[in-house]
Image 1 (cartoon, each protein chain N blue to C red):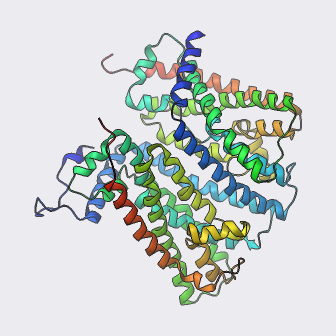
Image 2 (image 1 turned 60 degrees about the vertical axis):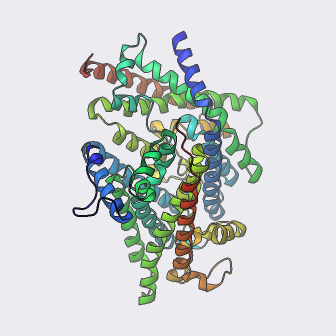
Image 3 (image 1 turned 45 degrees about the horizontal axis):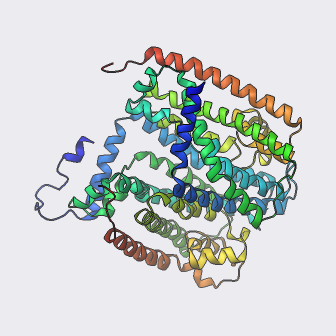
Amino acid sequence: MADADTDLRPRGAPATRPLPSPVAYLLLTRMWSRAAWQYRTSLLLTGTAQMLVTSLDLAALLVLYSQVTTLAGFTLPQTLYLYGTTRLAFALSDVVASGVETLSDAIRLGTFDVMLIRPVGTLAQVLSDQFTPKRLGKLVPSSATLVWAIYALPITWTPLKGAVCAGTVLCGTVIYCALWVITGSISFVATDARETANVITYGGELVTEFPFAIYQRSLALILTFAIPLAFITWQPSLYVLGRSDPFGLPAFLHFAAPAVAALLCALAAFVWRAAVRRYRSTGS
Amino acid sequence: MRVYLTAARLSFRRYITYRSAATAGAITNTAFGFIRAYILLAVWREKPHIGTYDAADAVTYVFLTQGLITPIGVFLGSTELGPRIRTGEVAVDLYRPCDFQLWFLATDLGRAVASLLLRTVPPVLVGALALPTRLPGDPRRWLEFGCCCAVALVISFSLRYLASLSGFWTLDERGTTSLLMVVSMFFSGMIVPLVVMPGWLGGLARVLPWSATLQVPIDVLLGKTTGGFADALVFQLAWAAALVALGRALTSAARHRTVVQGG
């Protein structure tokens, strides 16, 4: 934490100009990483724990498939593909944006006030808050699963399919990041309602690990049009896996993920600004 | 004895205060219950009987686990002791003229009762209203379930207490406690019911202490135990006794090596 006092500005930058947010974010992330590195044993153990959390969830999926051969018509490799893409996207967004989870504490303890007076964007500070490299542990099993699924799937790969596959993870990451920020902003309205945000973030991850065919039609439609979790992996993956939509939705939705990601980012930026503007300090 | 009751009561009051946070938590638990129920229903649609469970049992199981996850502390991994070792506040705890382990058990009991009141009923009730479930009407079953849950809490506490104690050696207990949380989530049957686990994995999961924290009490409530209530309770008590004893041994070991700065 000693680094918090040091000058974060790059050498030669004028003292009055605030740091650009991405630069500030990276510098703050580095500072928090160095702080976490002071407790090496704990960091390595928590990193391993994060790796295991993801692996055990995979074990759970395999356990379910040990009882059945298909789940709502989807084979194990197909579900593994869904699982791998959404997990990898979630893990990446967790590395980038899950610092927003500490926001409710920052508001409650009044440390958010300190963030407001620093010459750095609030979002960059909140996202990097208490960053720890242990989150990188989550990337290992999720990427391994995706590779395994791609290897096991009988897909004839075309350049478009490859692009959609890479785009799934990329857009999925962006969608998750936007969801972190949007749901995290709930802490500005109701400080102790933070846990409900988990329904969308962690719950969203759990929902998208499985083929949407297992859900009721009404729920699937809500998850497509109201809370667009379907675009994290389900819709683009239908194209990659060469399957038609079991709910009869139009095929162009397979390629709508980038638009949804852009829309959610705009919404996240709007929500964040609105929330910070109406923020009243809790301190006395 | 009175001091522990007071500790439990005060801890209860501390945890019962944050009602809106608990409401948010109950909503979250319920929502996750639905996701997990849909996943299990898809499995049971392919195979209507797995172990002794049918689809209604599986859904009941899901919502009961969602209701019990916070009171039993499956998702906690730690006790109040953990952070206190890290911050040094444990020095005060070591001075108290009462039993160190029992003190933290008492505060954990207060926490459990408070979250039982706030967070257990909503998921079970909403789940039972929305989906076909099978909750027994026999009050004796519920009484037996209550007994099993009490022992389950002692087991869960003892495991978390052991993980917290590791802080005396590693200075930061968070690594150990997060590892415990992972194992506990899986082997308690929180992610998938233990009945779904095949072959040796299922056999292993059944004898580990974590099965006694969720699966055993729920099996007793649903009438799915092979040996009945008595066998289930003996299994639970054996683990509880072993883990409490191990906690005592490690507590005294920790006491001998701890040096309080400035004390």
